[in-house]
Length: 528
Image (cartoon, rainbow, N blue to C red; front, side, top):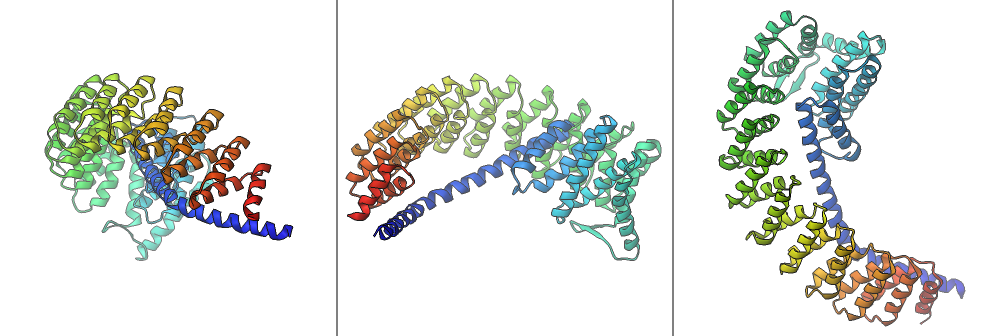
């Protein structure tokens, strides 16, 4: 008889368990989707920041950001890009270190490139990675590590095969044979050894028009040069070259230069093009320059450009600057536009500033803007500012709004604060708000609280609650507290609850405990 009761108890629990899992599946799917979206956005944000550090030659900061993507975002679309720029940054960083550190970092860079080449062979960065690996292998071989010659030997074998017509490297509908690639690597080495001899060859390649891919590679080599003719040639390529990719490359490198002539060339390039993608690239390069003229140009683009994507990118770049004029420009731009999408971008940029003026503007938007989506975006950024004054603003916003969606967003924001005032507000909402969904959301935010005070509050709310879904949330919140007192409260509720679905949920939660009272209660159910 004891065995039969045990089997019966098992079947009952499995029934309740299945019903409970089905009810939770929808919420879990939503949470999984939201987590994936946030991971993608975070990886993109980190990658863009890392590239800015690459452009400004802050190699250690670039390495830190790129490592973060590789370690935390294994499924990211930016993984192959990150591996390449990580190896490149290590390659550049090692140039100024002592011999022991050079060897260590250059070997690490080759490991990063090996991973990229082996795992992402179809990546657009694979060819670049092979060339960079040759460079590093040459460096390590010269320093006495003979085993790295194998990477060069492997290339030599492919060159011999290419002479027989067996091998071609095809990329973006253009063909560059491996022998030409290796010649470029040799030219790079020559530039380091005898710049006067190498520069005319580079200039001839770059001014030729017959092989765009070869010109792209030559530009990468050119940008290592300190030759007096280097800068004028780079400006010419950025402003006049008919090949879009060559222009993009030259614009990127101009962004790393601090001379005013470089900024003037970028502004000229911007004013001379209507290509949206090229404009975005120029905006990024202009933003690397920290003088007033650069800020003024970004402000002009943000305010007046007909290309919305260029305006959005300029706004984002202004938001990353620390000058007070930048924040004033963003606020002025916000007040001067009615475009909803542009307002959202401006809020994102304003939200980067820690200045009180930025907080006040976000609060004003959240409280008064006629566009409800824009108000919600401002609330999101307010919630990321953790000072106590901001908590008061959030509570004030909550008390003044009747929009349910905004209430839910504000509850989430208030819950980020761990002090008593925030908790008291959530308790007040859970007990008294006229909106059932708002009460439900507040309870959801409170469910991680494990203390007896919170348990008493939830137990007190339950019998006064009519809404079934809200009752379910309260049950789940009580269930998060694993104490004997919580189990006692669940049993007390279960004895009186008449709704079958709620009772199933209660029984399931009670069954997770080895508490004697819980076991006794479950036996009672079976023996009825």
